[in-house]
Length: 358
Figure 1: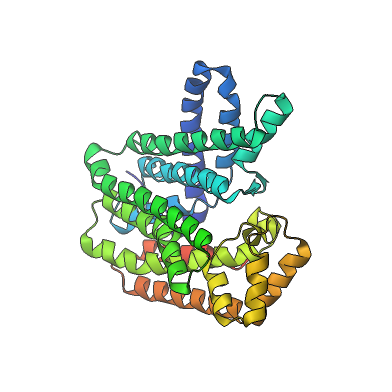
Figure 2: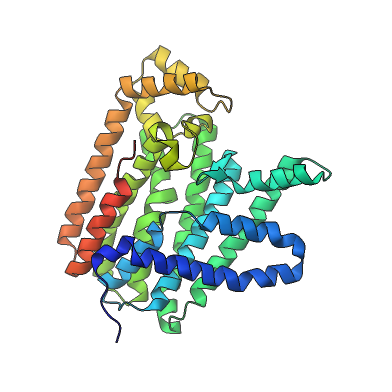
């Protein structure tokens, strides 16, 4: 008979089970790639390196959505939930190509890994084009594998059928959100409202709300429970992404795995930037527009932008918004029809998702 998992295991034992499920899945898949050609070994190495990091938040929210709907603690849910890490890895690989990011989780981003391989091997053609092409293909492979891992998780067909609609919707929303994010940066005339729309679809739903819905659907949860989980998950997802945006400017590189101010070099039109421009005078706004998106932005330039973001009140306004969203999530959780164990775990996850590390 399955045993009940203490809520504290949401950050410990369950993460270990997710890691083990990912390792087992990739160990089964790798020989198939290498049987096609030994030249695919760099693909295998890159995906293993990428999957070695991450907070495993999406699987955790999926698991506790399952438990909130009365699902028992069985290994099959860990495997199904772990498939979300493959989906996340796919999104990160593609995101890094679009943002021209050099690093991810403290190591070279996938397209930079393959760009370096091209250079070291003395191959013909542009190294950056090869790197980007290889990364796009690896991202596509991870996306395909996310579905395969879900379908081979061991959950019964009737359970998987209940979850497929949520899974499909989640994949659609994050890709649409990614496009809106790219569009926002390209237009350069966004507002706080348009930046929040990007946050909602690129991160809030995808990181917390939909994983909760997926877990609950797999366990046969009611529409009432799904609505209650939305009341908690959506504002928490907003707070999570806003915190991530703040860390992208002010975070410790040791904690974020990216160079200080990298989001500024990439020109990300975040809510933090929109709040700053909303409050900036003409000179401050001109400085932001001049420096934001400069790939060669110096440490001094980063410091100048940080000063403007702070002095205009943009940072304080963003922190207030984070606090407000987090409070909304806590209030919704208090009223949600979930068991005490799931309630405790979701409360802990809310803290983990919005913690300051700067």
